[in-house]
Length: 541
Image (cartoon, rainbow, N blue to C red; front, top):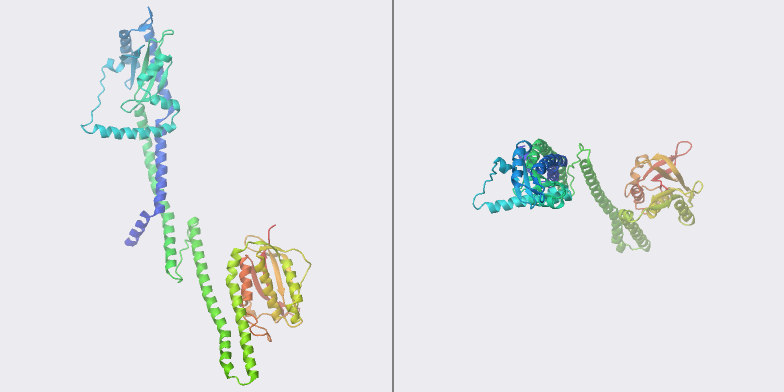
C-alpha cells in the first residue's frame, strides 16, 4: 500500500497537466500580488491628501517670508538670514519630523534647510569594500524593473514628476511662477512627496519654498503588512486548489491513458475498462466515451472474426461440392452422368460467385455509407419505381406481382439513396422468393408513424408483406443474422447467400432507424405471410 501511494505521489509530481495547472495558479497569484502592491503604492487619495497638507504648510511659510524676509527696494529680493530665522521659528511647529522644509533664493540656491537648522544629521552606512558595485547594480536593475511595472498604472504627469529632481522642481516654480507638485524618487531610492511654491510678493519671484514628506514608503509598507495575511491565505487556497485540480483532472487522465495503453498491448484480448461512473463532469464523459468506444471496437473485432469464420464456412460448401464433382468427373463413363456433374460444377461456381459478390458488397457497405453525403430521398418514389421494374421483369417468371398500396404522396427521409434502394430491393426480392406462384408482394408507406425515436423525431414506416409461409417464431430475430438461409420448400438451392436481410439491417441502423420481422395473421388468426417493417427518421423540412 505504501509503495502504491508513493507511486501515485510520484505520478502527481511528474504530471504535466498538473504542473500546467500549478503554473497557471501561480501566475494568477503573482499577478494578484503585484496588483495589490501597485494599488497599495499608488493610492492617489493618500498622495493627494499628503500634497494638500504640504501645500498648506508651504503657503504659510511663503506668506510669512513675504511679510518678514523680502526686501522690496531697490528690487524685490529674499534676505537669506531673515529667511533662516523665520524657518527656524516655524519649523518647530509647522514642520513635522517626517517632513522637510527648504528655502531657495531667486537663483535656485539653497538658503535654509529645516533639518540643518534643527541640527539633524543624516547617517547612511557605506557598503563594504568590493560590494558596492555589484550590490548597487543589482538594486538598480530591480528598481528599474519594478518602476517599469509600476508605471503601467501611472499617468504621464506622474511619470514625469518621478524622473525630476528637487532642483528641477525649484527651477520650474521660479521660472514659471506656479506650484510644482509630484512624487519623485530620492537618490537613495525612496519616494518623496514634494510641493514647491514660488515666493512672489507681487509679480516678481524672489525664491521658492519646498516641502517634502518622506513617510510615503512607510505608509505603503504598513499597508503591505496589513495585506500580507490575505496574501498568505490566497497562496494556501491556490496551492490547495492546484493540488485538488491535479488529483481531479491529471490523475483520472493518467488512469485513462494507462488503460488505453493496456488495451493496445492486449492484442485484441478484452481487459477491464475504466468508466469513472462516479464522475459527472467532462472527465467522466471522457472515461465513459472511451469505454464505449473500446467496447464497440471489441464488438467489431468479434464481428469480423465471426464474419470471417462464417465466410470460410460458406465458401467451403460450394468448393467441397465442386471438388467432389471434379474428382468424380474423369471417372464418369456415360454422357448423362458427366453432364450432371458439369451442371453441378457450373451451379456451384455461380453460387460461389454470388456469395463472393454479396460478401464484397457487405464488407464495403460501411465505407460507402461514410463516404457519401446524405440527401433527401422520397421512399414513395423508390418503392413505385421498384414495383414497376419487378412487374416487367423478375416477378413475372413466377407470376408474383409487386404493388405499392395507397395513393402516391412524398415520404421524405434524409439518407443515402443507393443503400436505401438496396434495402427495398433485398426485402422485395426476399418476399418474392418466399411467395407462392401467382402471389402478391405489397409495399405500404406510412408517412408519420406513432412510434418515436430518441430525440423525439417522427418515423417514416415502410411495410413489405408477402403471401408466403411466414417465419418460424424462433427465427424472427435470427432472420437478420449473416448467412441465414432458411428456404421455402421447392426453392432452388444456392440462389441466395443469406446476406440480404443482414445488409438491410446494417443499412437501416446506420441511418438511425430500425427493422424488424413478424408474421402477418389472416382473419382466422393463422399465418398469412411474412411482414418486414422498416422505420427511418423523417426528414425535417
